Length: 152
Image (cartoon, rainbow, N blue to C red; front, side, top):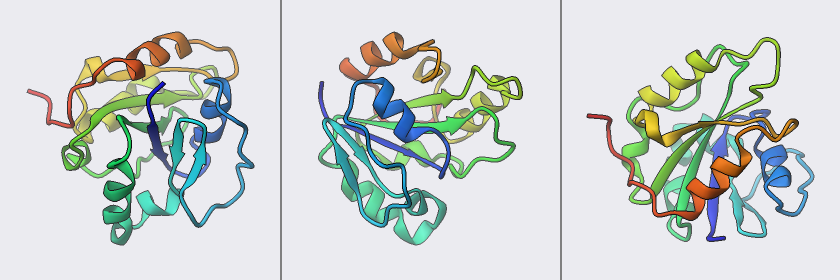
């Protein structure tokens, strides 16, 4: 598997997703540096939550074949700004996590990712607990992805 960067808010399920995809388990603790877990790159959530660190996210993505925007389906807000996918000259996928939860709103999470610049075909709903959608995510991350562009 090629190197893949997962970015999302704290608690969005990035570490659980890495573990479910077969990466080495990371602590899930507050990280102040970019973590590497096998083929996965996990920048700190603060890099996404503070626009001063956007350059660090872009730089970290340069060594990756794909970038995954991880959006928690149970959150009422999103840290991804409008058109954020256009900043990356790598393939970008949106991943909606925690779809197995009773309070999950997949449609709202999809709207957040669409607003960030992803097309409907670039968004995959998964559950690291039940395994739903993980095979589709593995296949999509292994293929060449469309670069970050605004949906037509």
